[in-house]
View 1: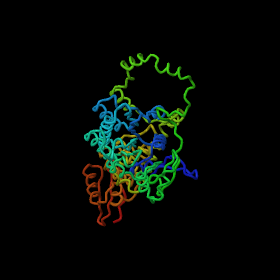
View 2 (view 1 turned 45 degrees about the vertical axis):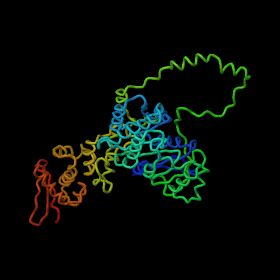
View 3 (view 1 turned 30 degrees about the vertical axis):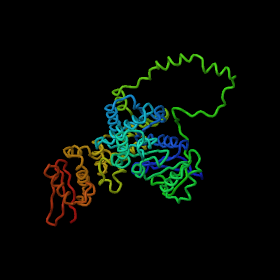
View 4 (view 1 turned 45 degrees about the horizontal axis):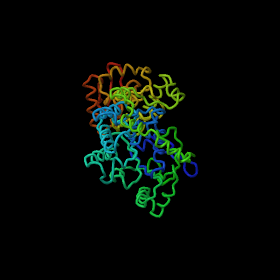
Length: 489
């Protein structure tokens, strides 16, 4: 399965895409000097994937808060909450899969590092059942994972570096896909940069940074000069989620912008020197009084209010007409689409051998790709419905499946699929499924486990197993009056 998003075009105007599904497993590193277009690139990725996957942005400059107005991201002002409140917010974010921007522009650098470390650690420590896939974007990553000690304390640097290392090294199994952007590779801790398998390298001028970027892109040193010639908004990309060979990409347009836009060049005012002198020195004492009594800052929402907002958050489409499209299908159409997704997953080779948590993450991604914001099922419902899909059940009301499911209600979801496959064969008068088929459905390579499972069904009063003198097995379901034909030995 793939989920490509277009980030721009190459020199031939052909689209260049990033596979979000592959990105979840391989992570991304972005480098470029100030003014090279890093934030523009990150914004393009966030905007294009907003409807596909949960997004968590660590924003030290407050550049990405504008995503809230268009894409529905929840903005969390890191300066407004205590450590305990931030940890609780992070837990709710994972539980409810809300897309958020953690704005840290109101804090000094040491406080930013401490706040980001606490927040990332709380995301990382979420319970196993909440390991849903999410993109975690960290802008100016060299601030949170510095290669060398700076002016901050060793304790804060260690906390921040540990959180960033956990995100990039161990976050994949927890559904957290790190996207880190830095101005200079030389300033970013190597154990953080080394975990990324995808790279987008923008303009840089220092020889050491060009050499490291060329090494990551698999280019010869003499080819590194072209990195210096890249224009603003142009990057060289490589990685399993982008391209198997280095490719030049010009990043496409975005719909949101930074909170503070850089002003274009403008000439100074045309005024006489005496007039300007008077303007500069008039009422200086009033400015001093204003500085002593500053205006109060805007009140941030209380942690409890923000938690309620996160709990009720649903990532919606961007425009009203797009929202209408998302909610337009009837409930029957939504249920049909969900059933088709489950059948497609069940038909994929080896799907029954996958962990249920991974299958559920795959299911949620597929639903978002089809813009299904209604009809989603929780983890418990998914287990049962996936077992039904493995048995080929499409419509419960058709062909007496509701009665079969009533009989099977005593079974845990993890042993339901083999019983339903047996019930299908018994209802249709087909030979009893072989141990190999039941093992595939159950997700095991041990036929001994299947024989023990059949014994469990029989002790539970669900089936009766009969073996004739030829060694042929047949199974009947007494409560339903169904029986399979004998399985040829």
